[in-house]
Image 1: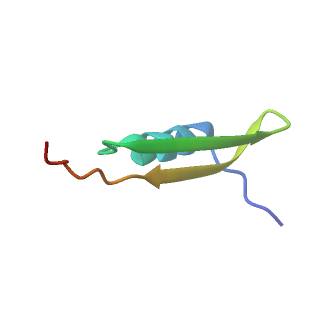
Image 2: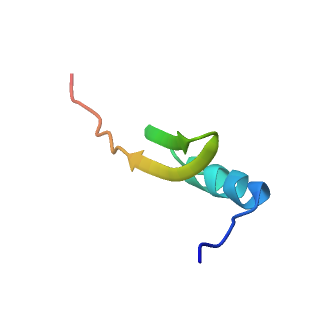
Length: 50
């Protein structure tokens, strides 16, 4: 049996994925109008000497 996740919990998970993200991406996968997956890709950037 699968457990239903409340919309508020999904929105909280999205907010958490965005929190403190300086460079990167947040991908939200939706199937049949329902959020089924959230991926966070964080990038680190290093200053270049000029």
